[in-house]
Length: 455
Image (cartoon, helix red, strand yellow):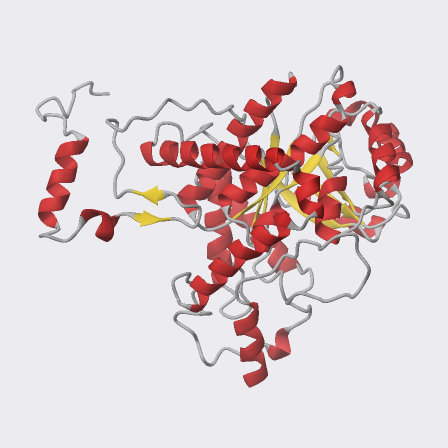
């Protein structure tokens, strides 16, 4: 290979010189008004970034590769086991089982699945220390590969109620933490993103949410503990890469204060917020971009959502395409060959620093106001997310936030009424709650409902 320095005859160009050249080419137009834009998080984005910019080197904990996951609803243990084995044959490397009740038998669910080689994630829609104890006993030596994702605070935020009540939930949590498991706590950050929170809010709430557990379980720190974050990823590509990197930095800073492990485990999934009913094939483009951002941001495991998930029941074609997208990224685009590929990119480094700093400021503000639970019960968190979601909704209606096929470049002949197998909108279920739940809602729902009426 030639060692010739191709650039030795060229003088380096400073940031000042670049800016002068840009201003000359603008022919009198204002540099800031024309080229600098501001994100919903209040971050001003410049047209270029340079080594002359005063940026401290950012150390992000490295991840050793990423796994392809598949989420499976386990209402029927035998069927879920069959679907899991098929997913592993089709290229999935990890499985996420969503379990609705204690009636689901673990031995049937995990039959013939090699849990020593396959990471298994659980999303339990109930809280039972006895069930988790039986689960851990069944997997035996494979506990390192089991992620329980217990999140009583997340359930309160999502449903408006504790699983049982405040006292019983915390008793159950303590019992579970005393069991022989490393990967117990899971923080569901995806709820905030899908409800309309901006990235700074997602980071600040993730940290404050986690801090509720760290305050609660100080006495358990003699045992190793690793926090799992579930994050939804949107299509603001570079910002989403930076968001995941900022999350690791913030967790590392918080963990250091408590003297616990600074490593964390991130599972990422494309957001539902920007998915559309009409021109649904564009959902494949969105999920591909979002999965790429998740990988480059340093997620440990990425699982995809089928392009038709909002209106079709589970089907082989949708599931196959979803896994194939990740297989293409990993095996044909070589996204598994380099760890921390985003390191050193001036733009991403700058975004990471800004998001981390703003996220930390919000976290401190929440703690100063009494903590996450107190602000959740006072409906402050819900109010802030609603305000952010409303700003995004206004931008969508004005055409500034574009969803192709929905508010731009519409195909008027596209009909969907006869293809709906699932209800694709927010469902209302009147019930008594302790506090106002945080509701996930897609941007396009109002537009789609009006189009369906006109078909």
